[in-house]
Length: 210
Image 1 (cartoon, rainbow, N blue to C red):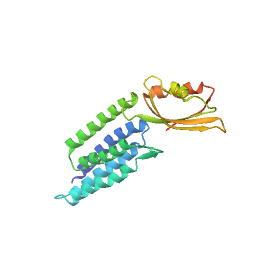
Image 2: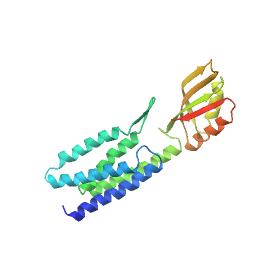
Image 3: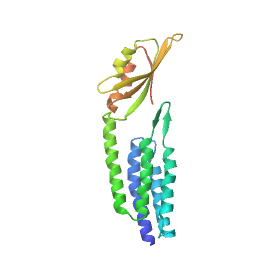
Image 4: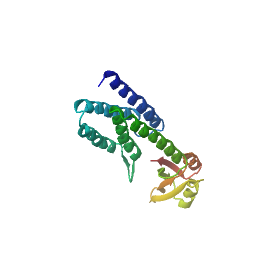
């Protein structure tokens, strides 16, 4: 394979992966642009190597790449208590390996379809997140400095489109305090108003979002 073609494929993979990874980094996702660049560029390089070493049957090497990336994607999963997140990041790593591999073997049309599809998904995911639709949920832990009626706390949390589900209630009679864990779903701007509303209450002690 000519050197110019090799450099062109690697450069194309780098630029496109950088753009997508940077967009993910701006939204504070667990995996930043560096990982997307490394995975896609590495897969592209291995695709080129596979075609060079075994031009008649590069499939065994290429399939091993996708399998290996699956283990890397598993490392993107994050477990917080009873919740597991990071599935989108894990899946995007795996798909970006296929994207880089497609460019590496010269399947530009397939690579273009994958890349456009990823951007469409990214924008649609952002729309769902901003409007509190689907899996956009947060776990909230509210601690009070005295025993209060849970309904009073819920009335503050349940603003606009915010939906609540009580998970754990802990009451400490000795210290005269209580902690309540909620699973909350709603628009980002509505959830961001909750700390300010809680802070105004005399019984409020602390607030944590996971």
